[in-house]
Amino acid sequence: MESAYIGIGSNIGRKTDHCQRAIFLMGRLEGCSVRAKSPFYRTEPVGVEGQDPYVNGVVIVDTDLSAGMLLKRLLEIEADMGRVRRKKWDARVIDLDILLFGSRIIKTPDLIVPHPLMHLRRFVLTPLLQVAPDLVHPVLRRSIRELAGLLPEDGQAVETYGRS
Image (cartoon, rainbow, N blue to C red; front, side, top):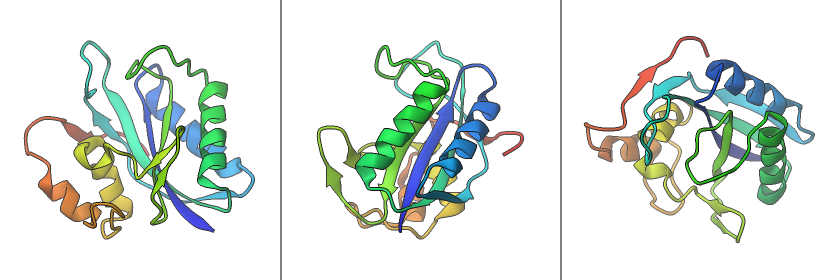
């Protein structure tokens, strides 16, 4: 079994409900069990303007699937929940990203792990800090706590959001 750290987000419709539904569906995947989930956070979109805020969180899934097969299953969950990929950073019903897959470093045409931007995103590091503060980024060799401390204080507003 490997521990996969999955970033989850939504900024369309009933955002928290979408995130909770995706977590439920991840737990039903064969070869996967949800071990932990962070609180949800309200976050401002990064890289685009004019979109609604997101609800973001992180889930730890223990899995015996390969990283590639897990990605395939996560993309199926996204599609089943109505996500349509039109353009990069478009608003979305649900977004599921493999942030880390154990301590593995993976680089294929379809998947890069660790997620190449995770260490720059407060909306990823804040929830990840809640479930795995001492986890070490396998490329940067710094803990999630250290990486979160390196982010600038201003920008990328993140606030605790309602129910998890």
